[in-house]
Amino acid sequence: AQQAVGLSRRPIALIQAEDVRERRRGKEFAESCVLSLAIWRRFGTAEFAQSLGWLERTDFAAMTALLPAAAVEAAVRVWKSGRHAVGQDFEAQRCVRAAEVRAWRLGGAPEGGRVDAWDAAQEDRARQRAEGISAAGEAVVRDAYARLLNAFHHPFWDLWRKRDLIVGVALGDGGLPALREALLTVRGFSGPDQDGNRAGWNLAFDLKTMTPLADSTGPVDWRGDYALWLRERTQKSC
Image 1 (cartoon, rainbow, N blue to C red):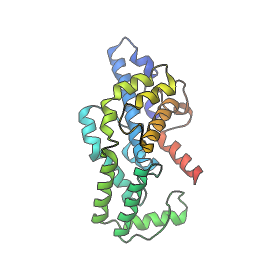
Image 2: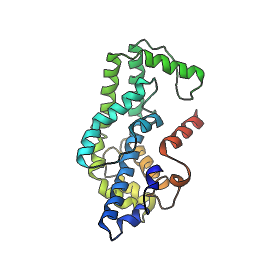
Image 3: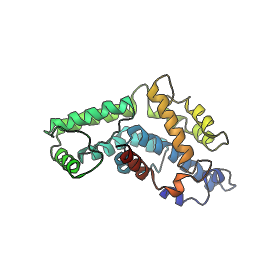
Image 4: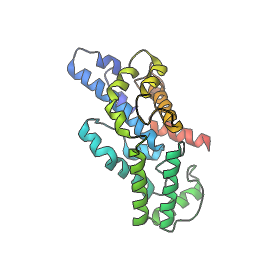
């Protein structure tokens, strides 16, 4: 939402503007929406989204720096704080989440359940995890985070290569079905893998309901940023 405030008009209007700079600004913002939401969703926690932040640039040089180096570093910062950087909506996420727990145990962290609702006991467990961070544990999670980004069946780069297609459809008048259809062409966001199919639906739904790429103003104007939205949704499901 904060990034949307800086736009003079909605992205569809900017991209159709006569001024070249406005067209470029609209295109860059739309690409940032797609790729920011996609990578936040790939990890699936508000903590990771806040640690990584908004992707201001989506050119090749910026993405090369992001994947996997900057994204992994953002996730490691969250893990070092004793919190999960990865959610548990998908099988790939659950595997990485289990690796996070194993990595904490390498440092002598206590056994325990979830650290999501953040009452006093859970905050204390997160502190104990953070105090026991080990080099061996960090190596484990770094490898797990890199695999989450670059696995053969859901490489993030394929979305980057097809971002123009996704942006064009997102700003078109085909609505959610058309956007979902476009995402079927992107590896990692389509079937037959159930997680890929779900990832495609999630990204399409996010783009069409909570960003300025939506058909209406939607949650991006009245609900605040993604991290706040995701944290509230997670707490309600606990």
